[in-house]
Image (cartoon, rainbow over all chains, first blue to last red; front, side):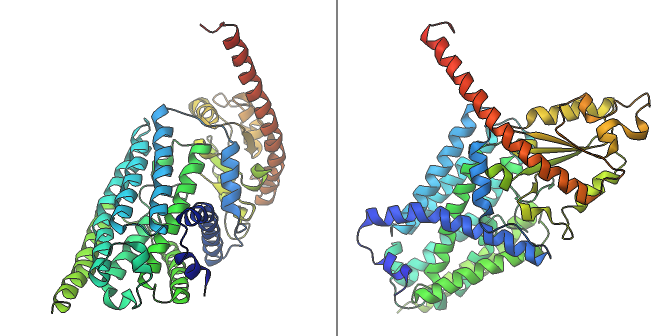
Length: 295
Length: 160
């Protein structure tokens, strides 16, 4: 019995919530550190230590916070709160549809934060964030619909305890989810709205005007988000927790390689390719599943 | 302590000949790999801790240097890279050159050289880290002092 199995079968939801809220940023930060290390090795560099993201965030908390408009911090705080809320809903075994709506709400608050300052870089970053949300949202909803078709429930705990592997029924939905995972993890070729890499055309995009602890909150919110996205990958392989764990790690490594080998797409190409993949793999998978499952 | 582990730099070319800029960028390449110290070239003054300036500042870049410096959140340090940035170098007597970054903003570390070698640039930035830690202590002291003063004003209703 792996720790994941143990966690899924925990009965006390308060304990589950505490474990999630405490462990998710640690895991997310370590993943970000591993990401930077592997990226550096792929480029022939030594790279920063694995706990570098924690150093960055602790430093940002000690730095001065320059506030241009008081609503900018309000919106970033709401983004953070809703990101933790979304993850908690998912990891407490709540409704998958509610998780998706809360995730969208968190994204909207981040875009609002970008619009609340005067910098044009922030504005373009926020517009691109909205375009990205428009691109990936249909696919995320199809993930929930596909899982409902197979298991007959939207509840995450029931899906996680489903005996058969979902990946056999939903290969197309899974491929579509991988496509949007690149957008959600803010990896190249889809890192339009805000990028970790300097000297892009938008300075830092959405987070240009945020400094100090506000920027740290955006980072930590992003770690929570990454853990949630890997959790959705796990659902596809939930029949065996070891396979699920291996799938999460391998696919994260795959995303890092994609990040290092692709140049940035324009927003038109991002939008078109994502909707094409959604229709071709996601919707087609669901239609075939619908007709094959009819008595 | 964390500032030492994760200094983010912003690099600005204040009318330099591009020699020092190439060397600054060279220190980020796999050969020297500044990122192993956690140093990231942010390109955004609001995220940066260390301001790396190259070139003898002239009238057109003077306001930009000052603007970037003002936009950086405290604590912050300035590193002048190259002999032009430290004193103006061979352009010191030119009519349109101010001669050094310290004519516009306070500079903490001078890295001479024409062009400055990546090794000396890295050495300069590592030297700047100690100054950054000291700045943090000063900044926190100033902040708590300001808060104390404000509380005092509020207590005696002097800020109405």
